Image 1 (cartoon, rainbow, N blue to C red):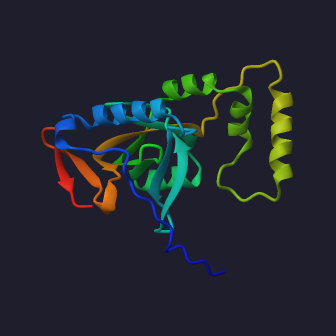
Image 2 (tube, helix red, strand yellow):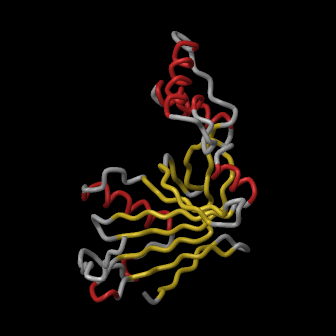
Image 3 (cartoon, one colour):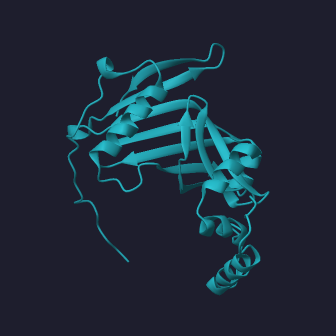
Length: 216
């Protein structure tokens, strides 16, 4: 396998990010960008984000998850606590989130601290999920080795029979994390690779956000 990709070229010309357009709060700017991406269309899942954790093997690992809620307190997603990412977070709560929205040539990178949300909030969200997704949370021992696809299908079939006509409880090993940001970086593609990069950093002492422009 040998493929040369050096001829791939794209000029970023859809927008800009200047100081006069910035807000004092990175949360407000994120919310504005999110809404603009939704309105522009062309992105199937605007809430798809990459989360990076430091694995127990010492290697960082990225995977895409879905953002389910955000406010000034954090960015919430749900997963199996006993999964590879869950075990990594239990060992090291420092994580990184990133959103890439090619329709507006934008990227947001967020560093933060991941903590479990309350059982009550996790249960409320679990109950809002479709039945198949609820059963799937029970059927999958996430990140564990299995013999075949048929194993999963049989587990799901058995669970469907077990809970027929019954309420499906939230698994004790499943729930949400909230990532409390310590740093945001907003990236806007610009011509000639002179992209706009604005970083917001939180001051731990007074919990205020300071911003600066980074060289592309």
